[in-house]
Length: 356
Image (cartoon, rainbow, N blue to C red; front, side, top):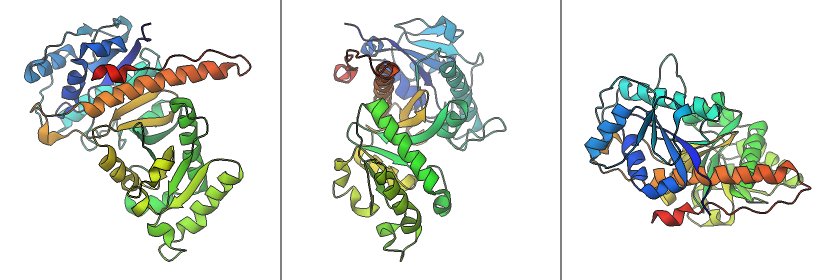
């Protein structure tokens, strides 16, 4: 039986980075079209240039709008008509401005249900800043445009790491963390594990805010005053939350394998071990919103842009994750629409094995 063909929106990312390359390499495998209809937000001229540059043989369908999407084909929505100059490896405003044009068009299509899910190619945070776009990254912009409370959730099949604070300066981390934030992030990840990953009773571990969880207040009082009492409150309500654990030994000891997800206090505390253990296979998933968005676990990689050296492994994983999560959410919505009515369990998306 043929799987549901999902309309998968794709934003092009910084034109001078590796976004275009990893997108096209992913869909060079025609078997991908069995699982989704790719909708790339860019322009036919830009995609043609990239195909010639990387010597890729891919057929695509240029369309004027999302209303003209053709199922089972690689669609390119013409967001712009001009032909911007691509200067691989250069950090300039041109690359960033077209990345935002692509992103805005893709998010608008997502909001209007013209596409089912979104995968975003990497952007450069400095190059995207303008009067019309003053967000530190995708997550904050999506939080404004979509419903819910966004949360950066780094995922693989065996490791999932969420953050209490994401793109925040280290000196400001402790000022941002309070009991309501801890509870909100925990509930967001808990619900995502249930709805998006099919884990009925997720076990979630917290890492301490300070080294050695503050050593009873010797290295900071935030753990004793805020984090520990809040986790106790959650446990008293029956939530399966554990910790806080000292971050320095948590991953190296393999303790992370005992939990369905880990919540780190700040960006590098969570992402350094995640990327060390999972680089090239990890996916950045924006949990907590009413729509599905994923991206690869790396940046624009200007140093190798245009050289044909970029691996599309993480981008392909982001595509798989978007499809899997979308299908699980659809199933979850059906199963919970009427809790008294039993419904047969659908076959899960199994495209991963076909890509080998």
